[in-house]
Length: 118
Image (tube, rainbow, N blue to C red):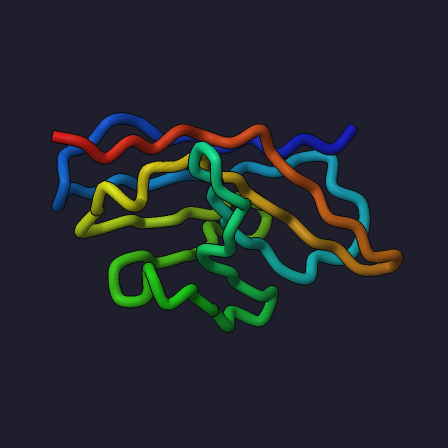
């Protein structure tokens, strides 16, 4: 059974850093890409960053230059989101999304809470 587990969230002061991890197991299909999304209370889920299987990355304008998405050893199916220069607006639940092809399917984790506050 497929499982996506996020970790690394917590409370951090403005200007601080956190590194989130996303570990996938039991995935069926050819990996196409992995993304991070976030959802703040009362707001819609929004795209944060994405890394395709070929290594190409994409970021939302709000995090570009501050966040970096990466992948560990491909055999480990683990991805990271390095978040620097955090702002209060970054406070949200961060969710990992793994997309496979053949047929297309998107797996979601339960999320990890990030709170940026002094």
